[in-house]
Image (cartoon, rainbow, N blue to C red):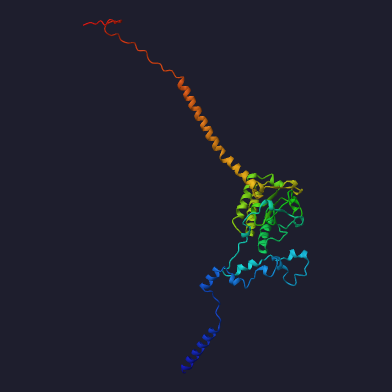
Length: 361
């Protein structure tokens, strides 16, 4: 058998495979210059053609909910149930090295206490109508879907194993509770029947969060533990700049502290099922409100009185004691009497009275 046909077949097969490999299109790859230009430009040259700004075609960001023809005919009362929690800014996270805007950057400056608005009756009514098992109460749908599910899983896990139920009420950052809030009616009144803890959380401002605890649990807990709990929750939330991560961190720390508190509590009394009030303890940690300028001045004067006045009093006391000691020493010196010994002189020149100058040889 001749070897030439076999060689010819191998050459033809290799050429066919090479041509087939050349026909395949290579995957797109970014060069170092393109990546550097993309980072320097902030991603705008590549993002703007794909993701136009929201105000360019919608007056409000909420208009995305009614952008399709099927959503225009829905009743307004159902929009809160089917409203999408995804935002246009979230799509930027899928771009390579795309700029990610921090969610809490615009909330870096605390809201002035004088500009806070009380929650309306519609908001409070929606919070009161929430079911007993609705642990994350968000009437204005402020928390995105992914963060909402993550926090909800945490609260449901806490409710399965904890004695003290934890409910979180999310309010806008510019809002506050009324002067006399009736928080016992929230979650269909379950807070008054069960041993519960309510966290009223202004989104983006964890230092204004308010904590309410059932009176039966509050009376068995030391003030020091409650103060440390509020401070630890605030410190955990401030580890992140994203408002939703802050809320999640606050909830994780509070859930952990409630488990610790559960071990220190005694057995449930017979009146546990009776209606009871909720006591607030976040004010002990100084996290309930943002201090006004007058409060800052009074706080500064109080700190001055605490740290400076004791030192001044100590200096004055030392000076008075020193002056008193010197006076006592002077008086002791004046009272001292020096007695010199009386030495009998020895007679000289042979006589007792030798005024004449007599002498002997």
